[in-house]
Amino acid sequence: MTKEYVLLNGDIIDGRKACLSAFDRGFLYGDGFFETMRAENGRVLFLEAHLERLYQSCKFFNIGLQATGQSEWTDKINLLIKKNNLKETVAAVKIVVTRGPGKPRLGLPKEHAPTVVVYARKYTPPAKEKYTDGLAVEVFPYPHHSFLADHKSLNYLFYLSAREWAQKNGADEAIVLNVDGTVSEGATTNIFYVKEGSIIRPESAYYLRGVMEGQVINFLNKQGREIVTMPTTVSMLLEAEEVFLTNSLLGVIPVARIGETALPPKKPLAALLQGVNR
Image 1 (spheres, rainbow, N blue to C red):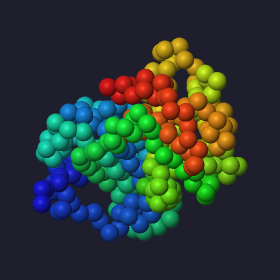
Image 2: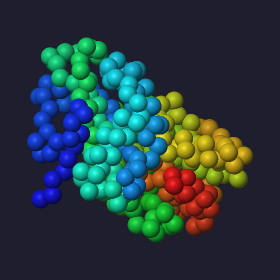
Image 3: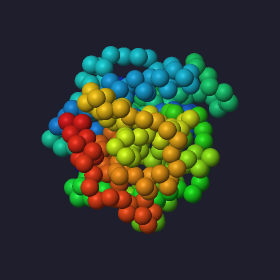
Image 4: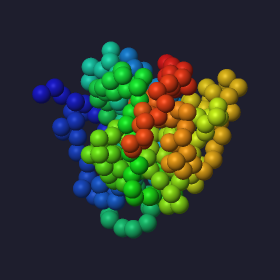
């Protein structure tokens, strides 16, 4: 079996020998955050934006993650990618930060020393035809409305359940609804759609503002295209001229169908945007 190395609190070690305390609050309470990034030929895409989101969440929840320069992160992640023989392929790089070990107690104690683990593994993107024809999507029947949705929290069971439910129903991704029945986001993605020429994002009080979502918005703004944010029902998506999803691993990928409803076969905007992460 090929060794898989990880970065644990700054040191590269054999992943099979990496040990965390049984009292680590990430294990006890899901008390922490993570970022998953795409790396191509040894280069992590949009690392600065991922780190900014991670630091903001840690600050909001009182986790004392010491801010270090992007170059330090880059150097360590590059070493990890090289150690795992991933420099000439597409890789998924994941940073996990927990509040760290300490006596089990409630609240958000700041005095803990955070635990930081970085993984780097080979990533196999969806088949090429998925990027032209699109993904199958189902609407998850259990609404979700929590301020935690604004953060990429280790409390991830809801989204894992939504994705698993979608796959058991023959789909690739799930649409998550707000408690009022409007569309919030995908289980692992952000959603855009086109209606009468307008590019629209579903409005939601709480959802994860994606790094790739931000890159798409910046690109479109530079092209002079306006993005509208508005409350969106599932029926509005079904009537859209085009629906596409974004996240840091997938990039931009269109939707072929929602439930039993097939969407229009032409997906020009998604095709245009698929070069954004290059």
